[in-house]
Image (cartoon, rainbow, N blue to C red; front, side, top):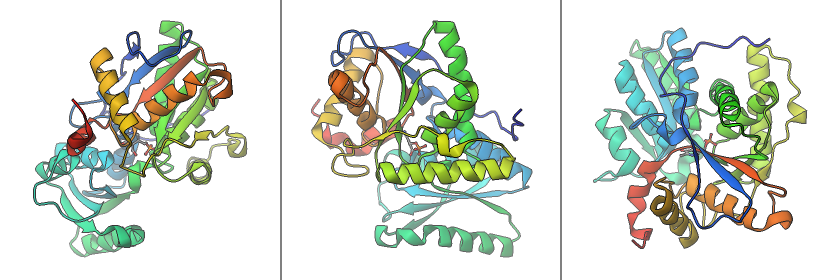
Length: 331
Ligand SMILES: Cc1ncc(COP(=O)(O)O)c(C=O)c1O
């Protein structure tokens, strides 16, 4: 019996499920469904809002009036936090990796419009970001404020609940649509979506192996990160769970030139899916994962998704990341 922690209702749930019917890249005999988590909201959209329902509830329980969080210049998580802060009357202080831009675009523009205070930390000093967050927390205490720190991507033992809860929603989706997927596929960047899906699937005994495509780091990193976050979750919430038996599977090979940079095949995939299905991926996360999934499906039994007949792709959002990379599209 699991006791759920405090949760704020912030996302538009449940999100729809859409079957891909016209996208030309799929092999015959494989049904692909998309869990439309890019529709959890408009300006506050994607996977992060599911995690923030728990992280911000915890901040509220602790009586915080300020949120400090961190990420890349185009972080979807930071944008979601900045906007939710404005909506909830909380001050948001972002630590962003990179240099200030005179004319902000995409997520950074929305961060600024939402009134977030931003500290820029150059990439070569990024390893200091958690220490900086802790020192900002102290400064806020001195200013008689109470600041709550949410780590990158809200991927920690609290944010983990977001995709555990999403699994309960998937369970309803599968029942309603009579689905029994072989695989549940997502992009992984800070590991929280993948971890939540893995744990939720075990707890609810969902069909489908959880498989993630990394958009940064490598498979070993995600194995360690997930093990650590789930272990902390077990300790914090006093949950008996076999973390060592988690079937963590991260498929490498689709990161391309690096985090935030994609090859032409990813931009082509994004355009093709938009044109044929009206579903928009992004070049940093979902475009790479979707491209990876399609490539592996086309390799059939010799690929890394063998035996796939039905697959559910978790669309984790990220649309605003398209705009700062407009020069790479050939439309
Ligand atoms: C659009 C989008 N998809 C996927 C991810 C990856 O999710 P996670 O950070 O939980 O691994 C992120 C964030 O990192 C994201 O912003």
